[in-house]
Image: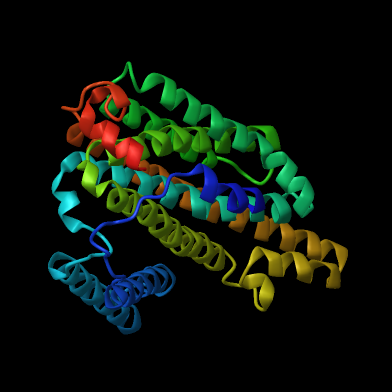
Length: 334
């Protein structure tokens, strides 16, 4: 990062908006309140079901979201150009980015807890076991870039989503005794699918937006990924926690709240009792992991069908510079 900060001003051409646009501070506040309300509502719904607190958060979050969209349509210099979503291909590409982030972010959090708590790995050892998933992400991104000029975006992105969904299904089938190579292999499929979809989605966002809106389009793409990740940690994490607490309803104290609490409690119990507690807690946590994984698989499966329909008319190579001057302008500006 230090190298980038030192060399970036000299190596990256600067582009200034000739309109001297101002930052939309009220719009930023509305978006923050909308996201906080919706994420809190998701957490409350999964943990407590339908109840007044969660419904109030949902209504407020939705209201602030509507106000944000209305403002963005009227303000001279919007944070997000909502008119871009009138293009089905753009909306599908942004949705692909958000869905992959939704599926992967929360699952990553659950995965490392699974490795460290259920399998007893240290943080460093868990990180080393996870290194192959970074390689599969790079492999998916490379494959997506190489295949994009020859395969239409609809089947290519849908295939990436299907690969990720298959990985989630396999994670949904693991148990506490599943060998780590099999578990990491399943997670590797998720990251490979994410690599394909992420690469293609970012290209499509720029290719399907007018050149003069390339910056706004890229901003929307990044925002959708961050929103998907935040919602994922809230939703999938809460799903897994809810399943765990339901399975451990007869266990009091920290052990009944989280698997980490069970691991911390076990050394203070007689050996036989500790063994039973850990076996029950590991099974409960794995069940929560399975449920969250199958939720992720459902999200990716639905989106795979959606992109097949929404992107069906886009030709192979969409997003490549050779597509024409409009795309060249978008790529150059980015």
